[in-house]
Length: 91
Image 1 (spheres, rainbow, N blue to C red):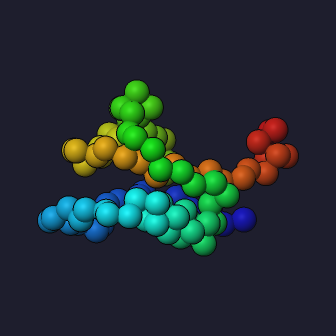
Image 2 (spheres, rainbow, N blue to C red; image 1 turned 180 degrees about the horizontal axis):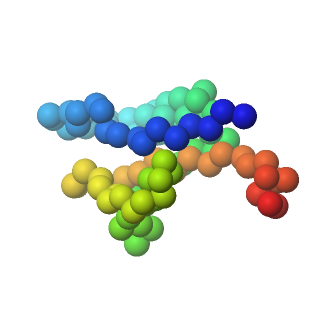
């Protein structure tokens, strides 16, 4: 089994201007469709709640603590759910 251990990095700059969404339901449907296309079993969009953010995360390459930096001003998040193998989780 091949294991993905590359550190995720924000390699795409944040857009200079914000795009207003006039049809939220249509955009939500499209985001969920794309999430399922890329393998998500569940997808939802909700308001960001900083109580659910970890101040740090583990770098899986050496398990060192790494800052969990996110761009300022986020108001919404996309939450994805992926089915897990029951036997693997039981270990």
